[in-house]
Amino acid sequence: MIVTVTPNPSVDEIYWVDRLKIGKETQEEYLTRATDSDISAGGKGINISIFLARMGLENIAMGFVGGYTGHVVVRALRDEGVTTNFVWMGSGETRINLTVLEHGREHIPILIDGPGIAVAEGEMNRFMRRYRRMLKVADWVVLAGSLPPQVNLAFYYELAKLAKQAGVKVAISAGASCLTHCLPAAPNIVKPDTREHLSFEWMKLGTKEEIISAGKRIVQDGVEIMIVSHEVTGDIVITRDSIWEINARVQTTQFRNLVGADDALLGGVIYQIYNGAGIEQALRFGLAAGIVSAESREKVCRDMGKIEREMANVTLNRI
Amino acid sequence: MKVGEIMTRDVTSVEKDIPVKELIFILDSAKMSNMPVVDEEGKLIAFISEKDIIKAALPGYFEMLHSTSFIPDMNQFAKKLGQIADDPVERHMHSDVICVEVDDDDLQAADLIIRKNLKSLPVIDAERRLVGVVKRIDLLHHLL
Image (cartoon, rainbow over all chains, first blue to last red; front, side, top):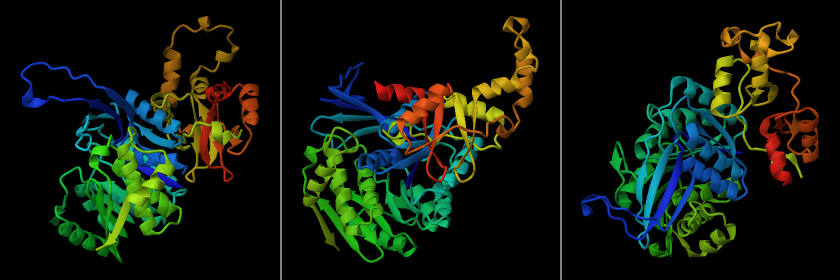
């Protein structure tokens, strides 16, 4: 069983517009009418849960939810066939994340993420008790996304440590500041969130060389696989034995919606490894899943056949 | 069709040592009217509903009354509810829980829900771990 933890879920609202005027471009009130819109449950772990469910893999989603938008998230997950086990917050609403995509420039989304609800001590205790229980049925836990206000940066470290002690494998997808705290727990897979300023306390991750250098140090400390999205259509992957550059031969102008594509990538890698595939097959499938997701209107794709066909466009080169 | 195909995939549940006031909060925020009680392994051990809490908070003589008009106001109920608020759920839950297994037929779940007049029915796996619930609305939605 795979258990995903999304501490700060969201309702994702996506609007497609022909042209967006913002900031200093406008001197007076200006109405932008969307040509299309979409609403869905979001947050990195939730996107991964939905992807896995669409690939036919049963999984359980955990985290904190609140208010009307919390019910939207939980309902959407159940409709996808994901088992839910969320802690309900005493006050506040699950956040809304807004994405605006201009036609023809969908590969450069405008993202506004809500802060989320602060987690109180009682709610955290309730979550930890449930999490320990879930570890008894889990083979993998996926800890993904930003942390809500008032949650300590070492939260993922604590969860990863408990999982490892229970013999459960761990994948973490989060910002570098949060990941830095997790590394001593030696998670199996780490994927830094490249949407944020990407640097560890001891090294920034700008160039390919910097990513490889940091990755080597991280895998030396016990991590098995580090995946970094270096370009929109390419990743660098560092393991204990190898370093790969994976790329997809696609035009970014084909992209309709990049939101969730990164999560489909990690979901694809975990899906393959969970089913016993080797690392190369997992990486090819993962990148193909990310590309097909980016090309579709939906956040994460549901068509296994399309992913398998897209794998032909993925190249994997050892560095 | 199997129960696993029609159930609501939710494992929201409580442990037997949490106080009644916390259970009321969870029932309210999760918009549920009853809750499975599980042990530390996630195995189903009991069931508790809002009806059980109301019953526990009503004055002892309530069942002897023919009409609620004999009760002057809500004060006695509120006072009793306050008295049991810190009780562990264990004190008011039903250990003789009615449930179905994930591979049981939907007909079996429907039969229990109708015959026992239940709002929902916990679903367990072969190791008695909670894996979901079948609600009356799940059956109606499934049959339509």
